[in-house]
Image (cartoon, rainbow, N blue to C red; front, side, top):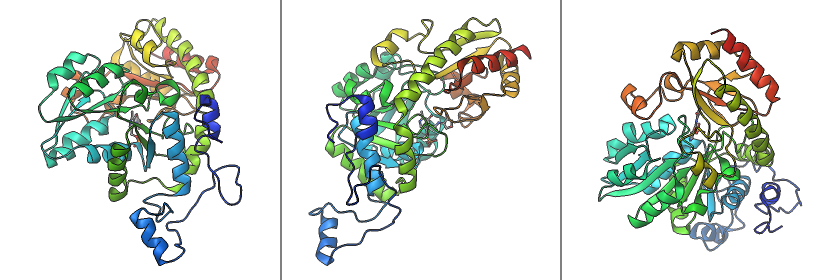
Length: 393
Ligand code: LCS
């Protein structure tokens, strides 16, 4: 079925228009590393591009293609490239879009390794990187250099929940001949479609909302333009950062309930945020759905909903946060996010531990910051868990 003109939920179930010779109703796992050619000429034609048959799973595979085409349709992009992990997606995009003596401007608060990969690894190939608070466009303009090629933003950002204006960044990118890449992991295409605001590339850790069940790791990249798509696919195939067919099958399965999972989780998140906002032991809370969030208006403009991620600090600082994390029972003390279960973690000593103290401070990843990923449990139970744990402080 062609789902181009259909609604988001219909796309979640039917996009990708998968068909096979057996009439499978769902996408099967094509667990094969290689594909038999009909004859030598067919093999040569597959390699030259005259025939579009499958060749080898690192290059393409029917299960993986079904996921790629589905997510590309959800993001209103040209086509998708699935990767082994979210970091596989990020490293593949850096590899495809950056070269020696070129410069990238990135949000200062991004998933720790996305920054560390530029600072510690791509720097060895003379790729230059600046990290600025992209919530203020003036910082981006001030960081521009003649060799700047890529503007990379994460919005909402992990773990500060800073929001960056995608349309304003797209204008800066157009005016200065840059490519705009958006990590859309925290929103998923259900809440935010960066390509519609003028971004060139959108990527995800599908480990999070897209798969949604905390049982696989994976990534995906969607490009708006066929030429950029080809450059990124080339890097994926040559670096071998491909997804595996079973991983793709799991993600396709999880993806079908994306909208209903997010609707429920963000409904819970709003109640949790209000509970924390009014709790006497809470010093501050950042949730895009609260009017106190500095970019609340922008969140309303570019997101369809406020999602289920939030960060907060307790009046007792890190020590109090540690006590909170040690005394919750329903919330799982673990990294990752965007699954059906509620998770709690401490970015400064966990997900962002690899960043220098100075970079953490300037990016707003303070020692007291606790990150909370709200799941789809009964909200009364999530709040009561927090409430009981806060009593121990
Ligand atoms: N982008 C964002 C925004 C992320 O939060 C993560 C992982 C990645 C990319 C990388 O994806 P992965 O390779 O793990 O699939 N974020 C994590 C986090 O906050 N806790 O554990 C992983």
